[in-house]
Image 1 (cartoon, rainbow over the protein chains, first blue to last red):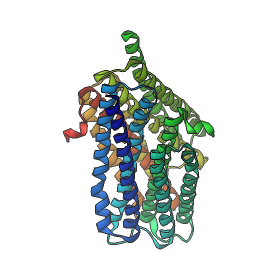
Image 2 (cartoon, each protein chain N blue to C red; image 1 turned 180 degrees about the horizontal axis):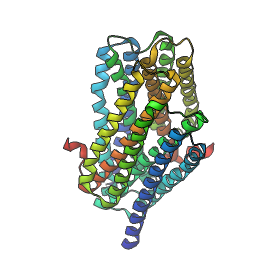
Image 3 (spheres, rainbow over the protein chains, first blue to last red; image 1 turned 60 degrees about the vertical axis):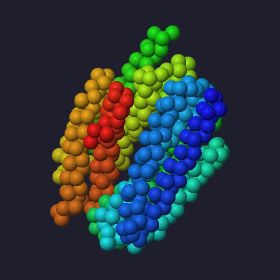
Length: 217
Length: 217
């Protein structure tokens, strides 16, 4: 009985990794779609979001069943409760990639990103990918040191986000209000995506240590 | 033993209501602060956010203890797991009020809201208050019909959100890019706040029925 239980726990971890990889792929593709005004890729991201949502609901149902049937304690209990929270974060990350893809589609055939912001959005996409690749690794490895260090990548995202606003507010900005609104929202989506990835990593820290990573600060 | 357990469950419900009321008050005050450029109220909202965060962490710790010690099943288990999720939503709502208060403080002594948007932001604040007051009631009453009907109030918020963009994009907009960026973010904060309130109400629906309110659609 206990063995089957630990198989179920492992399966939950596998699902979380799968969700993470899907959210990562979604954001990589959404970035490509919005930078290159690629409608086909945007549509893919939009329709694939359902897969992440389904995995999220499925994982929630399985954790409830596990809690009810196995009545786990200590570390196992923490693993399950933490999984519920991680799953929420990752599902939300999928939504944020979905928002970016939808904007790419809404502005198609025009490119939503003006030339002077291509570089920043490219970088935000790269930082998002780096953070989520690391977070996915942390879910598997439970490496608490890596979880704490992820804050640095998040700082890089915040810096890009501030830089984006500087360009929007520069006197030379020539793309008008609508593009400024679009870029404000896109910037926010990348920033929140990174926040959620950091949140997932922090939950791994809590899972392993029983204390919050923020207490270190 | 079982009686003490149900006292603990009730106490969790009381904490959720307390958090909801704090989040509601925070948004009412943040709206007043940003509409009236009232620095004192903005500072209050900013410093009070810690109370919501503390309640959230405290509630999380208590739910873990309850799960470990009491090994609840069926309805009780669903109550606890749902509480964990509601607590996350409400904590986030506090953050969103906090963001609005911070913007009021950043633009002080100027008023962050230009005259032609005062009416919309006022209305967004009122809808937010109405939704959260209802949601708080739903947490106590577990009224699933009210939970489903909350979607209508959320539709009202979405309509105001679209109206806000219309004004920003009107040729007569004379407040420049910075204010347009501010208003884009403020609009997004109210909209997300309402989304989270609806999410809390949906969780009550799940708690009572064991099915998701979205399945009704």
